[in-house]
Length: 256
Image 1 (cartoon, rainbow, N blue to C red):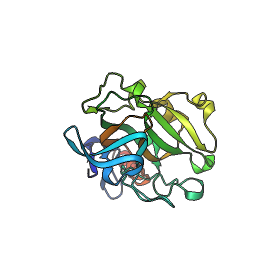
Image 2: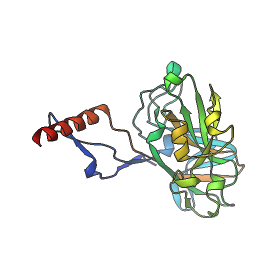
Image 3: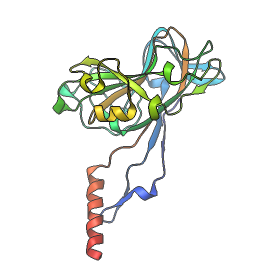
Image 4: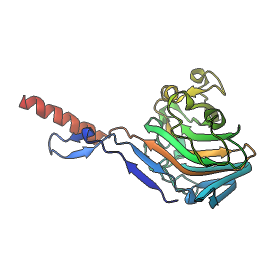
């Protein structure tokens, strides 16, 4: 599947530069569907499969399989470049620069979803969305995984047909726990290892953190196919846009 990006129309969010009078779009929500054919893969992964009348899907088999895309589509030292979700780079590559240009602000993410098919049953324990996240450089050398156990988020969906997760970051359903890769675990704010927080709580706990990769883990022992894996993000206004807004306000004040 080719990567597709859709930008919402937000005419009311146009900022006008006070000096040049140039309009630039700000805070537009963008949804990007990952190109699964060039996504990262490890374990029992079959790409470009045809399952349940849908083609070019990815199948994650047992006993273990992972597929992922970089947040921005950028590069990472020592790693093969993969397709990505087209998010705006955060500029924080972590201590030692290990994230390269893959990192985007975690707070920019507003949604995530994908379609899934399991011929045998629904989603069982061990089928998870994950986000590889890391702290701002000033906080040290910290990296870990946010993991969303989808078997608990989608109890009413059944096997033998294609299902859509919808935006499972919304409300209580979008809950995750943090597991440490290296550095410090923010367990004091998470309440300990394996403690779930909602997406809104995570934004406070990991304020200023970046996300490097977003993917799906299958260690459930089942075979599950996925399609239309997408992330929606709203980048924070850049410095130029903020300067333009300040100029617009100053100009209006002078005119008044």
